Image 1: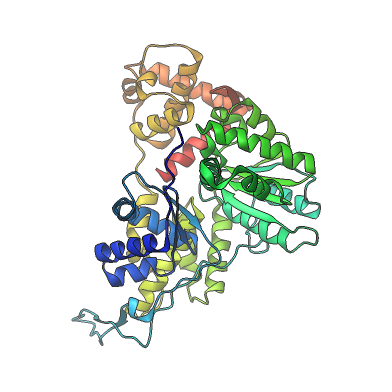
Image 2: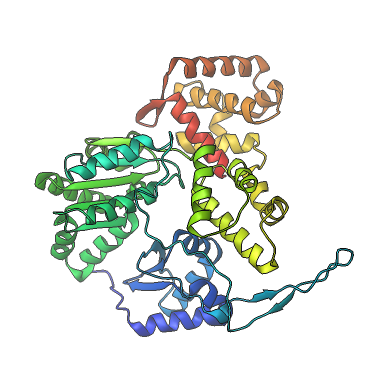
Length: 472
């Protein structure tokens, strides 16, 4: 039976916007949605933001309101997705922001700053809509191989295909893909270079199946010089889309065209995609990326201050680089927040201001890791249930992850051997000591461990678990 196809119109988008204005208020709506574009296709609403900072805020703060508005205007069950549109410019109007006029403050009796909304001046809000380039990509040990592979591929597009980069969220995969796209478009002979996420590929494919036509879909994504697909792990479970992607990859390969993919883990750990896709994704060059190290984070912060003409002491930048480990987007968000606070209060950026402004961020970055956190992260990687780590089962599938969990518990918590043993199924403290020694030996010897249907190095598994513990 043919599924229902919802026909959207501009009036639907207008009604959707009106609902959001009613729900959020005009000023709040203009601040966060003034530079945003909405697209309604079938029963999928896509929210296009001008930059990653805005996109993350919309997704984290307003997802519920967006879903409620979509359900009200169209029908319940509308799927909401988020994406970046580089062509958008933030359209924050002057009246959308309160301009802060701090009163003269005596040392002994500080008074509250007076908030006045005026129409003649708005705080400078740094825009992140500037298109990423390879020259702006900060290279370090954590991404050097991937960047080298990208630049090598660009010298002769189609010779290294597919190129797949993988790593945790916020390590720069999307930046690298968009930079590759921009660099390719500037080359002679590369006419069409298309970037999209796995979610978008799936949405457009399903629309084509439901009525817009498969031939035009296939022409668009197979008749290209360069196709870049982000977050390919999200193809998991979408069987028809995976078959279409497989045929697309085969056609691009036959024509000698270039495919670039990004994922949160290597192909060998995406068994849910099936052996055919995994084999194709592994057939070119696979490069890992990790979170930026201290030196790279500091370089990125200096770059941000130069781009936005901000005056931030080196000591403050070093503190931020030390405290904020992990997602580079968090560095951008911290700089935005610090800059706005400095302008609102009319005072320079100091270490004290940074510590006060970003106290909640710092506390999150250094949250205490507990035994439950470790159990959850290990089970997430190995596809287990927490109760299995505590069970009496002694199969390799259970015992190796359990030993890893015990090893991580000794590294990240102050729990005694006996406490760790009790947590993981009332085991003796000698069992925990043995597990710690065994994992140390695995790491020193570069041993491998089974991960689902695939195998990876123990050190790689530990890095992935630690990344999950960092980000929560």
